[in-house]
Figure (cartoon, rainbow, N blue to C red):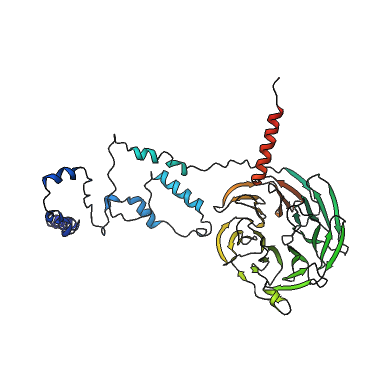
Length: 491
């Protein structure tokens, strides 16, 4: 019985082998050479110099085991696909890193294909050297090596200032830096001005009501070379004040909100204010009847408010996890009230306070979510499409685009309390800076684009010189270096 079974097995194997040999190519391909006419004697010498026709290595519909890596194929079939951040943190830099890692681990032969339908090209002889291959593959590995970042990123702050009574409230906006190099910071019920050029400090104002305090502030942005004379101040007693910084005098007080004013943003003479009453109000500071529009699109406190550089779109973020984009449609309403934003974006899962418009790319908006979200998202403000999303694993408190480079700075709260400098659009971490002992609530950028200042709940201000400053600062450094060299003489 055993001999009979062995004989039957051999017959089945022989039949399978004959079947496979028959399927190696179609009969038409096999008999093609036989149908060709014989070559003339004169053509034989010419044909010798041509590349010989390649032989068929197998049928294109039948995989060949000899051309497959069974271990890699088994891994591709059985590996788990449930990666919670697979679509969130996908970026070109990470894909390049995976390719480089696979090329080194599998000697350039890594592939996601499970089945192979053709033989690999035969290896060249050991003594063969292709001159063109030597020419064009000299820098082949240059793209696989990690790119060195030439700019030095200091890991420690350049300066630390005390900020006593700085409120530990995520929803407030208590820091701003104007074009005249003056930093404004709200400490409890007062606002102090620090001149970064000479280091002088003066108190601008102090709220008058009992238990009242400053909840937001914003310099009027009148461009480089402007006076930087006026500052808008929001208070806990529902008012928006305009202060003349040079005279240290309040010039206007505007009412309309029914709760504290936690966010402010200028657009020329138009001032937008967002409050705990979930309303965004538009104030024209040039006229007596300042209230020109009301935007109703949030259900909770409006804690983030930013006008685009072009002045055509306003982004508002709220404690209801909603990011709204507004245009000027409120002006066409009879009473100036608009209940429908241009775009309503609901992907965040926590409060949206951190907002930043890109200064060198139109319609690009970055937003950050709170503790339950921890995401930085990038939006096309003209279509509402989410271009990218990165999980920072920490509460996002503030965002600042670099003025002169494709970089983004984010400040964080729970649970790491750090600053991160990102390269855009790859979102690779250039530097991660620590030093604050509590969440980094506020952030502003110097007018020259080289320094960011952070205000944290540990009641300190820290100045980080981590940005390049563009070509202007490079020329200044070159000029300073040249002056030093010229002053050195040999006697």
